Image (tube, one colour):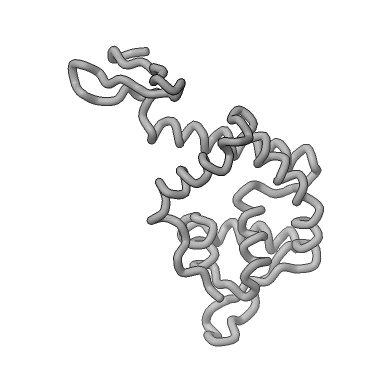
Length: 172
């Protein structure tokens, strides 16, 4: 590894990292930011691959949007972006593609005629049901390198790290 850093094993066999002794910085491949970016790429790749194998013509973000819309019928786009952790500037494109595929629709919001509410179409419900096991298998595949006994602990630790970014204002 460059910069004098290396991944080490602590006394319990856990991965730890040393810092660059000259600069005091973490080497790239041991930094949490880099590792979580790699985990994100890996997990999205696995889910994408599994959805493609199942013949589902959607991306992981589109799947998340469908599931969130199913859980919150009538959700607006800004709230949808918040619920799935996506940016508001590009959620419109996700919704556009799902609408073109006939999986969801935009209707006038019941409380604000200027806003649009999102609802799943029958095809959207059917697609979620059809790929439910596929997505579950992808999630299991993402965690497969870890011992099963550590899955819940790992997910709890990740959730703790991102607790401030988890959606708090999920609509009723």
